Image (cartoon, helix red, strand yellow):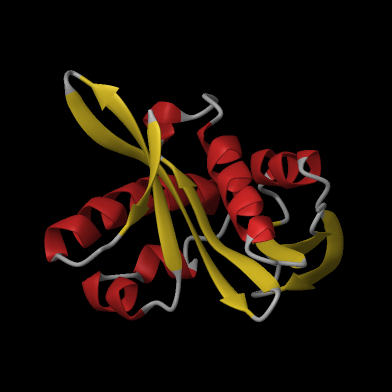
Length: 159
């Protein structure tokens, strides 16, 4: 296993990420009861134009490195926003999301980040439990379409 920055310079690299993203966010869509979430609408152009830094979690399977998870973030000054967190359903419950989040928190704190923000569907209990285990606290809960709510969490840097 390894965590590596994803350069996403070729269509092939982007399609690999999109395949993972669709598989992961379909599960979230089912959990929150809402199919119209933005990550399921992405294409090559929107990923290429995203103002985010991506990291991938690779596992060695059958002598091949396979992208099993990914995280992206954006940064404005000292504030880091986790934009995407995804793990392929075949790799759920293996600590991949935890490893990716920890990697970004440590890296960005070392680079002077003071605040972290992340949002997820309020009904996405696995994601909420993950963020709370890293001492993220609820900042606000808001309704997107009727019946679907998102929760935004925040966490100060620890260093």
